[in-house]
Length: 145
Image (cartoon, rainbow, N blue to C red; front, side, top):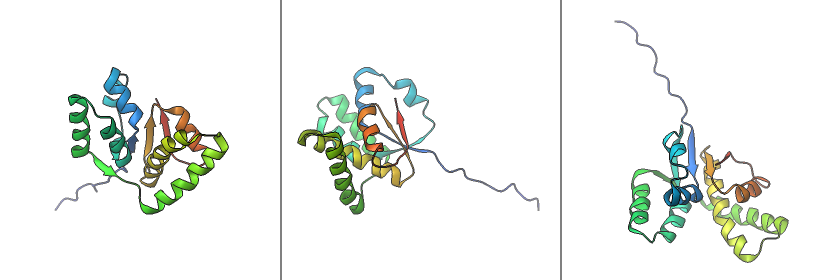
């Protein structure tokens, strides 16, 4: 019996796409080419889905968010990440002088970054300012478009 070549599996390059990329692309098709050419296996953050559902007003947006919910593997922050995210957000707010609204807003971004880091995924965003600030207090793979 002839031996077959061993089957090897490459580790998948994972990515989590931030809300800002989805929103910009839906409004203007700004990232259409980049998304179509993406060389990553995409995972969807439950936090991103919540943000998208919160803003889904049009029929097109509702269909899009529903599609993501049904077709992508969803990752969610765990208990430790929720606790640690509060510490990170507090450090950021003090260092950057964020008001209460900005502090609340960036908390979701921290949770998205933490879940991406946990699964070894790159985080792809169009919101370079906020995620660059977050990288000052925690390490994660970031791609800014």
